[in-house]
Amino acid sequence: MPRFEYAPAPESRAIVDIQPSYGLFIGGEFVDPADGGVMKSVNPASEEVLAEVVEAGPQDVDRAVRTARAAYDGVWGRMPGRDRAKYLFRIARIIAERSRELAVLESLENGKPIRESRDADLPLVAAHFFYYAGWADKLGHAGFGTDPRPLGVAGQVIPWNFPLLMLAWKVAPALACGNTVVLKPAETTPLSALRFAEICQQADLPPGVVNIVTGAGATGAAVVDHPDVDKVAFTGSTEVGKQIARSVAGTRKRVTLELGGKAANIVFDDAAIDQAVEGIVNGIFFNQGHVCCAGSRLLVQESVYDQLLASLKRRMATLRVGDPLDKNTDIGAINSGAQLERIRTLSEIGQQEGAQPWSPPCELPDRGFWFAPTIFTGVTQAHRIAREEIFGPVLSVLTFRTPDEAVAKANNTPYGLSAGIWSEKGSRILSTADKLRAGVVWANTFNKFDPSSPFGGYKESGYGREGGRHGLEAYLA
Ligand code: NDP
Image 1: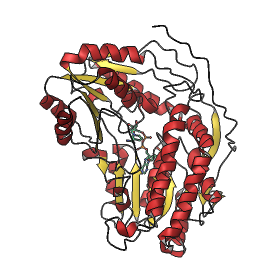
Image 2 (image 1 turned 180 degrees about the horizontal axis):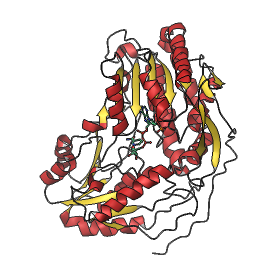
Image 3 (image 1 turned 90 degrees about the vertical axis):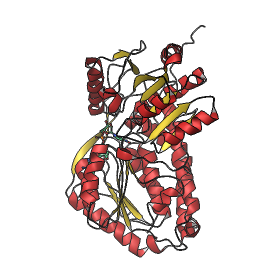
Image 4 (image 1 turned 90 degrees about the horizontal axis):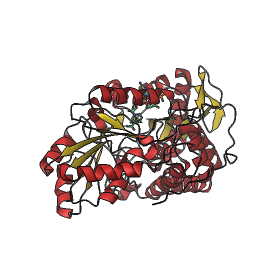
């Protein structure tokens, strides 16, 4: 079949006005730090500095928490749910209205393709606010008693892979339940959270209900450790999740942790192979593989291995890697130099341990952080690339002979966040799903999200659920 060439189709960045520097968002306004330093936000596709932001110090975090407490005691905690709902609906509508601007900003700072920020991230961000706005006046009917109470001040720390979506997952249910928040975005992706702060101003959200403190790990630790925080919500690495669990142990703080994953994507011999290949590609190359629930371990039944691998390679050869703002781009930039280094290191370890890498021919840009889509074959369960979260566009391919072997291999991981099953037989899907120790199991699809559906892990993937009615529980007494 002839291949079509694609002409560049860049989205204009003129819609986003980025200031040279930003303060902290505390008490409804942007303020100068008391003891903070300065850090830079960088476009990972070009290494261009986008803006300077504050690295908040302990005094700044303390001010944010005290402000959130005052807003909780004075306004938000006692406001009727129907009134909180009005603010949340307003925020949701503004997000929908400004979604193009937000999508461009998200792609500029994160490196993800505009097609994904425009068609996946932003619609889901707005949907989360709409969904939880709908719950705000119905909490007495959610199954947590007739008059469930908010917890107070929520300290929330989020990662860089879905900056606005992770913000929405945390802020929307917290506010719907009557809590106020202090949120720390990731060091490499603070700008969309600061844009969200402007949206809170635009929505006339009472000052202090949402506070945003930018910074690095130490700022996150200051939020988590603050004695006047009632609830800690964290998404990020298992390593930091363990530190947080240790630091809040023995305190009154409630905690939800959404941590790493090493999901098995299981393809049985009766699966529709082309459909499965689309799901495999989506499962590992969506968002450059910077996805906690990425299908990073492919388990293929031996009898269809050759056919599936040939088809997967053909499909991978059509993936376009490059400018995140180009609407044709499938795979954008790796979010940071540090993350690129981690992906390279684990890939080299994969080779040293005897697995064979394969990537389609693809030209990577000279500047910025890039990694070609890669699959490793000849992977065994003992290999580090089969056990550790690479968090990049790297797929480890393993095989199995029987359904029992597939389940045993899928569950042979310290994680338990997600899994995928590909089969034409409903009974096989149900019996396999039943045996998988994973919070989410997708059948004949992958990476499907909806605000009404709970999400969370088993084992070292964390505890607590976000999304859906279950997601309310994490923010109610
Ligand atoms: P981290 O877990 O370090 O970062 C997540 C968030 O926590 C960031 O906002 C980070 O700030 C903050 N943070 C860091 N240290 C602390 C601390 N001691 N107390 C409180 N907050 C803290 O992930 P990384 O960005 O360092 O990525 C490392 C690896 O983690 C990745 O390669 C990937 O494997 C995994 N990861 C998994 C994610 C998931 O959703 N499962 C998401 C992100 C990463 P800062 O940004 O300044 O470091």
